[in-house]
Length: 300
Length: 300
Image 1 (cartoon, helix red, strand yellow):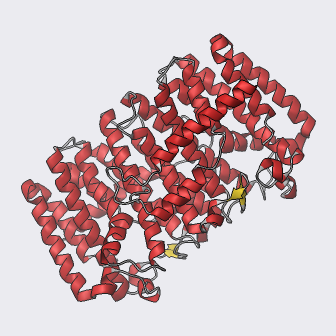
Image 2: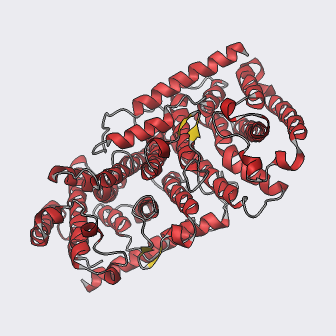
Image 3: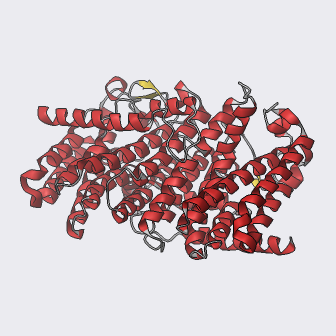
């Protein structure tokens, strides 16, 4: 596990460097100017010590197929930009109204609400710049597949759709299947896409692609279950964000429905499922196995 | 001019139909569900009787090169989705705080603030779905160029950057060159891209592409100048949005700096410039000439 932690940290550094370079004050062709305040807000929301789990999944699934890792890193950085934009908008007063994110002021606290909305918009937009940049060495048709997959897993029928369901869940309590759909969309869709993207960019077979998509779905669900367990069992300091929010809001989660013990048992079941899906890849998938374990056992 | 008004209305209908079809409750591959409330908010923000000027520009510039008009329409619809998302976010309480848009309640008034933020996010995202959809019959490399151009003209270095400069202009008054940059970004970038996109998708020569990009820049500036003039000379009813806002906010615009007469003279100069740029295309560019005239003389 020591090794895994190091690998994850190294990846986080590399993705951070790539995002840092993209968010420099260098004006790219097709741009007019990069307003310093907007750039600063985007950087605040992105260069924040995140684990970069989604890019890690893109890269490690791509490694199964000996793909171009530099291209995988670029796809990972695009995905991370989307993830970070979603956090900025999620923290807004009209949404979760959170002052803290990873122990630091959220973007609307450090800047202001309007700037936070626009910084999120610009991060969402720049994700598609990453994937369409002519410098990216990847077949054009594969890139279009990656772009389409990202748009569909991040938008109306994926992450953003899940956020709306989550808002609605505060007043009209979803049942178990409603909660599962909500979570598969809100947090699951991007994690699933991360794993599928590694296969797409490697031009993997349809079967392998579906296998990794299922693997992504399993750890996406595990990620959310672990999150809901942590909300109950952890404290704000350890989490780096407000703990106990779900209980305070009387929020419908699988943990609220079935309890922490049930959730821990489910998590072990998901670990077994993930292991089974990775089996055909043998030792090559050891890092992905460790990633699944990490997601299930994470403390923040 | 009668003919032109009919052409524009016909185009608006066709773009409206394309957006309507994309925003149906049909779940596309890669999506999990389309939450009805989010879909309704997106439709409210998009299917609102807009003139669809940007798509019209894409299509009419593409016509100069006898390009695939169905593909041009799809690019136009993507651009319109971006334009509409920017209006939804611009109207939010944290930004312009507008209750009315084209005479109807803005999205956050008809729904709520969180839903409006997310509807904007989902519209921005779906624009890239349009352009990467495998159903679009257009060379993959050209599509990537279109996606990259859209991302750069809509994001940090384009429209969104301009919105941040516009917010800042309320407190630190920009000088003339600052105002020109702000307007070239906030409203100019997407209009310029619309004209350039028509050339890109037609695989036009570099020279023609630059010529149409300059044409787009000229009418983008004219669009903003006409807007600033209307804010001074029109009333809320005719505009379908609150008039006199710039004066009330003591906003730095070229009209505030130089007056309405100067602006009208400038508009005629921009018309001449647009005419000059279109000259090599002869009669084929008549509709684009009429469009420039329409932009300059528009009443709302």
